[in-house]
Amino acid sequence: MQVSGNIQTYWLLLKDLDKESKLSLIELLIQSLKKSSVKKISKNLNPISNNNDWIDEFYGCWNSSDETAEDIISSIEKKRTMGRENETL
Image (cartoon, rainbow, N blue to C red; front, side):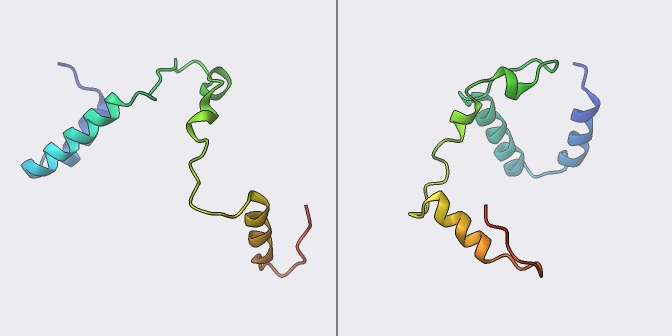
């Protein structure tokens, strides 16, 4: 089996790990391969312009706050300290 340069570099870093660490790494690699959201896109294509549903993968990811987007923006703007007046958007 021919190994690419990138893989060889990683192998040199990982080859001395203990057995449990290697098994954990293998498990993580397998999980990453099993992800249903992984989509192969040609290297010649722009993934954002050719994948119209990319934003759906992030929708609803930040649900840990009861604040609205406007409240969060206002809070951030009030905390700015750069020695100038804040511009109102």
